Image 1 (cartoon, rainbow, N blue to C red):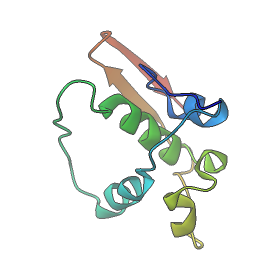
Image 2: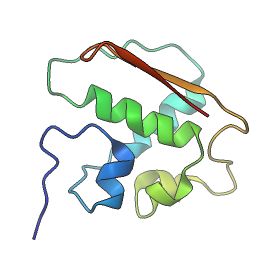
Image 3: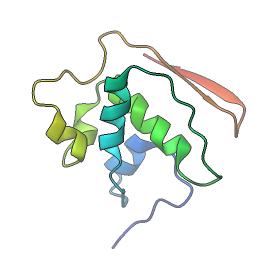
Image 4: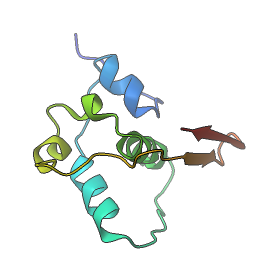
Amino acid sequence: MTKYPIGLQNFQGLREDGYVYVDKTAFVFQLAQSGKYYFLSRPRRFGKSLFLSTLEAYYLGKKELFKGLALEQRFNGFQLGIPNAEVKRCLLSVASCTKSA
């Protein structure tokens, strides 16, 4: 049975629990390689938080979550993540900040 991720914003949860996922990981690679600042301005419910969760998984080196996605094809010797990376993520929708390491 197809599971749709209505209201879910956690990339790891989507991938591990078998939800439908529209692959946007090629954009993750482009953003990470450009080294520029970006302002993600999109309307409500357009996947901003999910995309940030995907970026977090990328920078923390969670390679297993990208199996079968566009980003996996682009690895080709490129090291996923940053050693000893610390990712800080603030969600304004719930007014909370978390720190991953």
